[in-house]
Image (spheres, helix red, strand yellow):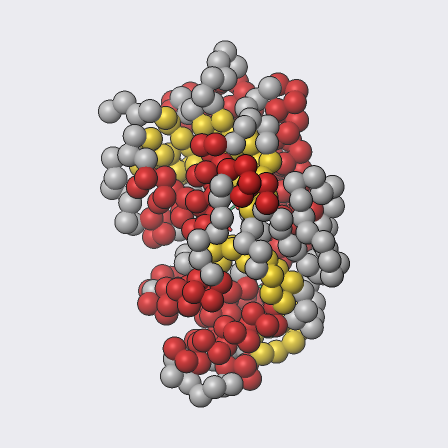
Length: 353
Ligand code: NAD
Ligand code: DAU
């Protein structure tokens, strides 16, 4: 079958990638979506069982750090576009093992850029390299202000530095080689299928199992939360409408201190699990702070709203209820990802805090 576009989504078996792949496969039967993923601990094909047999979907297992493999894949599939999400994504792991982040996030991105440049060199018409990035590249805010697309980069963790490096490389290929690129920088995502190393699914799992809730420092750090399906919708809009070379911030104007968010999570879970009010809050345990912990993130997404018409669809309270319900109703998924290696990771990460 001839498809209108061949699109390579990298990291499509991860949290955000799987939501994006699902959206694209269902919404655009005329596009072929190739999901390229290494299936690290964070990649999980169980995230995509509902679409795995669709005729416009294909999964390819592979590592973006492997230059030869990436070049062969580009030759074989003749991609019109890349939407690049594959990354090492957890800040705490980047503090323990920065080289994994440097290899995948920097070298892997450079490999993809080179493959796109090499394969598209004769004709950039209709081609696009879409790089999915994070608000963490802008650094840490004080009590006021918000990140704009023009905010100077000031990354402070190995993770955010590796993402900032990849953003710089993408822009360098645009300016130097005229490679058609767009970049988006999004705030913290939450929703179903997120690996339970990140705050919200980790705390849902611990509340359910009556385990301590390890709050870093005083719990006063602020994050700006967006429902993952709204992020996927934003990527769809930017992919189709953005001008080449542009950058868009994506966020939901939804700032919470960690401790306030955790208290809401405890309250909703007490209700859902039939526990007495206040029971889960007693699990809160203040632990040693994350090294170099960024204080506050806040995204100004006005450009995306004014230029491309995207706004978030869901209020946080509703999104959080949906997310909790998903984890409570998908115990098998949670059991599978929290067995084996996860237990080791958990002990290493939290034992000495
Ligand atoms: P994730 O960790 O859930 O998924 C990452 C995916 O990339 C996994 O499926 C993994 O197997 C794959 N991968 C890792 N290394 C690879 C390699 N070398 N080759 C091929 N595949 C590889 O991450 P996520 O939270 O879904 O984030 C996706 C992207 O969005 C990342 O680039 C991240 O920086 C960015 N982002 C995330 C958030 C967030 O809140 N989670 C917010 C803004 C931006
Ligand atoms: O802002 C976008 C970024 O959001 C993405 O680029 C990253 O990929 C994603 O992991 C996320 O980074 P954070 O570091 O903000 O997310 P995390 O869920 O790890 O932590 C959220 C906040 O909660 C942060 O202030 C640290 C705190 N925290 C986290 C964990 C895991 C705790 O207090 N205890 C914990 O056990």
